[in-house]
Image 1: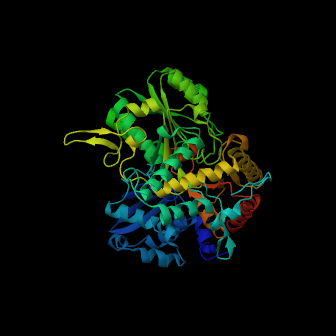
Image 2: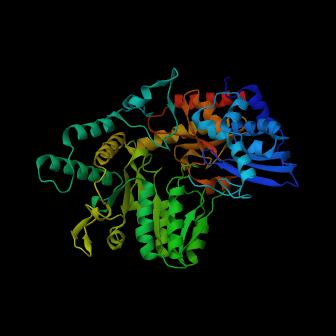
Image 3: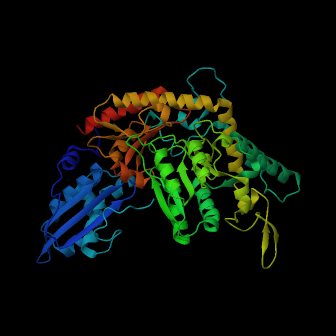
Length: 135
Length: 411
């Protein structure tokens, strides 16, 4: 139908990779997109400074969920410091679709959660994924 | 001005923005609960004000200032009369949020004590929640909540039980829910609250634009609404208050224009309603809202209500005929305002709004500033189509076609 809802985006949305709970894990964080109520959590197991395994969890729009799914396939095996340095361009290039300004936050939510988990700095305290935010 | 006899209103020609096309598609505007579009009459009134009558009000003695004064206070008279209120107890604020903050800050801090309760409902907009959280934190008062049933309606039985506990000082509730469309029985709530010695604040943001309102019949102590949802401009809200309460309340914002005498140590306040209007007022906006209520009064609010009720019934029926659509709120259009919140199975509301938007259909997908309600409904957000007097059946048809198209993309 159009660029944003290409088949591979819908495919990742309907069957997201690496979604669920990861126990035990070493790092975790939740992020929230107040624009549309998307929630995304991430749990990471670390071995030798690398992301040994990772799961995203949460609910959201096709763009935020597909972005997390696509990113997860790249992140597993990546060095933590390399993952912490990933920027918005990395995520947008990976998606490979035109993202409007209003949907940018959706596309970058998984990156925000990832950074939060690794650096401990984020919008929400770890484990506060079910909190509510104001608008 | 519309003075048509047809049962279905068709006033689209009065709204310049509705003649626009985006990407070759006409605008199907279904977001009037967020803000309404503006008729030519409102745009012209504000334009003429600035072109011909602009001067500051209340202190000028030259003729131009007197014209501005007459336009501003004349608008207040007509705006007050539109809901059956009096100009003296009709205070202009920036919006409903500011009106509720005025009451929470001024009445709340002067009257609420530790152990007192402000009773809210599970369907409130953030604007009728957060000010009470702040005043509760400052005074030691507590918040309690009236729940909603599976049709998004309140229980008067629960209201009575809450009031019987004897600690409720104020009930604060929406007249019409901005998400569910539920029309709350505010007169009945006021009657019961008053019997129990509690005051009532009504957030009427979604009520005044679409149904006849008689303040005398409702008898709420505070009744707040906003201009931009009622065909008027942004930047002007209205607080109707009980005269006795307003007299006793201290000022909210302080400074220029709201004072009578200012000494070095203390000052005295102007009479109502000016005691609550600090600084230069939103003069052009008052003139614009005056034109908006004139326009609505000429349409007739009974007719506006019937038009939006019929459109809502038509939309409910059409959306129910589709598979995979969940509709929130009261089942019957008789019991709701012109708003339909819905969810499509397996499709996030944000994606729904995006795909509808590409067809020119403007709906909102969000928590609608009602996050406690979203939590209660068990959804992160809903898609919401809401109607104004300028919507027609063809708009609903376009909505339904676009919903079907969205379902095909995600099939």
